[in-house]
Length: 171
Image 1 (tube, rainbow, N blue to C red):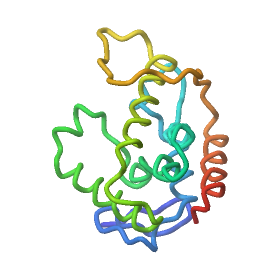
Image 2 (cartoon, one colour; image 1 turned 135 degrees about the vertical axis):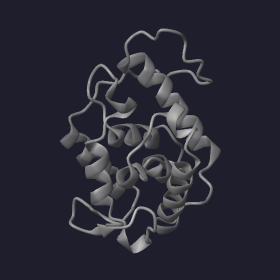
Image 3 (tube, one colour; image 1 turned 30 degrees about the horizontal axis):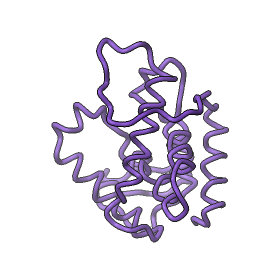
Image 4 (cartoon, helix red, strand yellow; image 1 turned 120 degrees about the horizontal axis):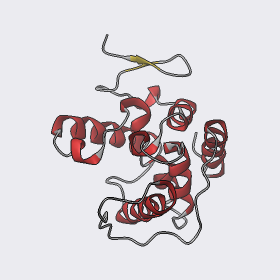
C-alpha cells in the first residue's frame, strides 16, 4: 500500500499528498493522540496542544501558521530531532507535505520566522514544565513563556485544536 487510512476514513498518500485529501478533523485527532518528545515527558502532552499554544503565542496574521506548523506529523508522525537531521529523505517528505498544507489553507511559504521563534519559546516552556531535569543544558536560544503548562487530555486537545481552527476560519 502507498496510502494510509485517516481517522475520517480517507485514503491519504503521505508521499504524494493532495490538498483536497487534507481534513482538519484528521489533523486534530491524530495530533491529539501523539505525544511530544517521543513520549519522554513526565505527563502526556500532545502535539495538538502544543500547536494550539504556539498559535496563541503569535500575533494576528500568523496564528494559523502556528496552529498548523506541525500538521504534517498527523500523516507522517515525527522523529526526534537528532534522528531527523540524519534523514534527509524524511525531511524532504515532511517539507513537501507542509507545503501542500500551506497551499491548502492559504498560508505563505515558507513558514515565517516568527512561527519558528514561537515554537522555540514553547519548546523552552515545555522543557521547564514537562521534562525531568536535563542531564545537561538544552542550550535553547529562547526564554520560556511566563505561563506554566498543565497538559490537557487528548480529547480536550482535539477539541481546542478544532475550536482554534474555527476561530481562525480554517476549513
